[in-house]
Amino acid sequence: MLDNFKQRWQRFAAIPPGQRFREHFKQRQQNHPSAFHKKILAVGAGILIMGLGLVMLIAPGPGILVLILGATLVAQESLAAARFMDWADLRLRRLLIRGLRVWRRFSAPASR
Image (cartoon, rainbow, N blue to C red):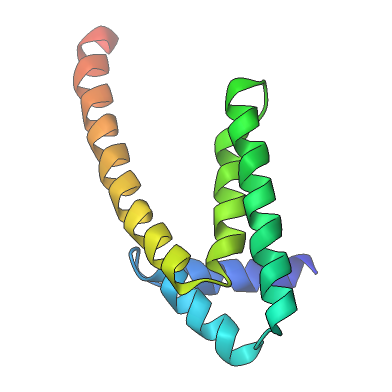
């Protein structure tokens, strides 16, 4: 089971950012066409998990990770959600790169 997860993660990571979630959605729809009730259950579970993540943002816990997990679950069954996740992936990467540049710029003088 862990090997299967590793293989799926490696395939997902090999796709360029900004296209990962849409490609995963397309592959999942081709390989595992879900019945309507399964899609509703998956989207419902994803929304419930995202709600839990919102609560965990205020309360102690890994709220952001839980939000991402729920959004990923929804993105597996919804092309619109997959597009949003690709958009958010690109924006968050840019923000992280800028933040790291600022961090390095201000922390470099302190280490000398």
